[in-house]
Length: 312
Image 1 (spheres, helix red, strand yellow):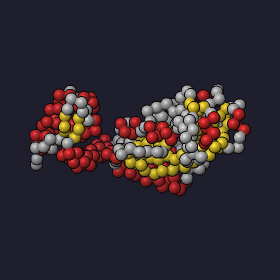
Image 2 (image 1 turned 90 degrees about the vertical axis):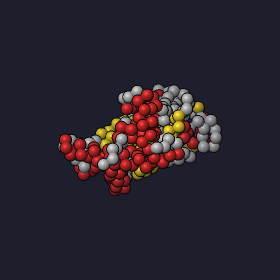
Image 3 (image 1 turned 90 degrees about the horizontal axis):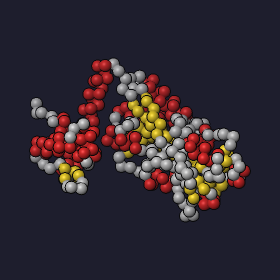
Image 4 (image 1 turned 135 degrees about the horizontal axis):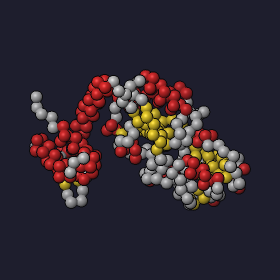
């Protein structure tokens, strides 16, 4: 049986993600020179150049890209086989890690309970994600999947079930002049100061959840900043600033010092389950199917969500 160069393959796949010899070495706990040596050995073994090196950047060659695309699924399948064997040997649970922006919807909690009943060896571990950083943890592999606010426009991410479509509301102090209004048009946001999200979310996501202009192009002022829902609500309650959030979040966040005014003229807020395309597993697909089934059966209209869309 021919030898399978596992260490060289792992090094190449990590380098294909990082495109940086130093960071690859850090992930593999080896030196940068060892990374270079492993890649060179693999290239000699195959008989083709896999990586193009220069003083400024690292790129996969065309052959290297094709090799990565063919190799990744086989490597994932091998890892899954080994993980499954280890789980059976140890009789220990293998968790699936799911991130959430804010609190968990009722229907998602039901989906988690149903999944764990059907897969007692796969508990679901929950991690709260920063409101302004919905994708970093799933892209970095710190969670296996995440429930995030749309939009999602990243080729590395698979968008699974989409749910919880709600209109938007404006949270303001009960002393604010607009607090007694029956509704507010999005163009009127140009007359207010809003609380922006703080975080490294992509610019296209920020445009939706922290808009700098109204739909008609009028500038929107912002001041302060919040990385959590409670930070945003505290700034609203103690100032003349406003906060944009979906209807479900408004229901979840009712308090005596804040009023919620329906806000027309903005797109609906929606959530989706996402995961990294190159780390998709049978467990993730099964969890996604369970979420889809439970949400379809129970809906999300009565849910209490901590996820939110900030304006500013």
